[in-house]
Length: 146
Figure (cartoon, rainbow, N blue to C red):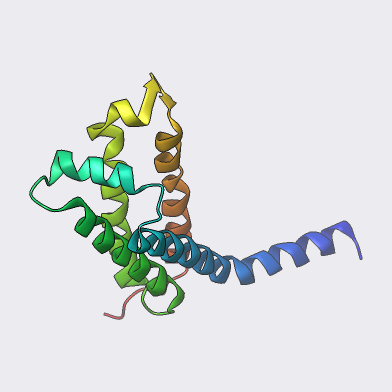
């Protein structure tokens, strides 16, 4: 087998499995992290509670974290159900808007200096990869019928 044939084989394999693997990866991340919030074991719960106190102080933080966890679990489940892309991607964008808020609302928690994110800030910024993955999934959709 030539180098070109190996290259073509690998590319075709990746094309075939990129969307299913992306779906599964997003399911694992959202369902698992959401489940941890529901159970009260998420290391992000403190950040979520602090953000809530600065944005929606009238809601109990414990209730919000559980609801947010269920919301994440729903996003995860919808990503593995083919045909739900047009439902889940807008939900993901709402989630991403909420998760990027600490970078601006809680700068003391998310930045240790100019363009130097804390561990929490890095955790948030890595969500750009989640957005890119969702865009990759959406790029394989067929247009709606007229």
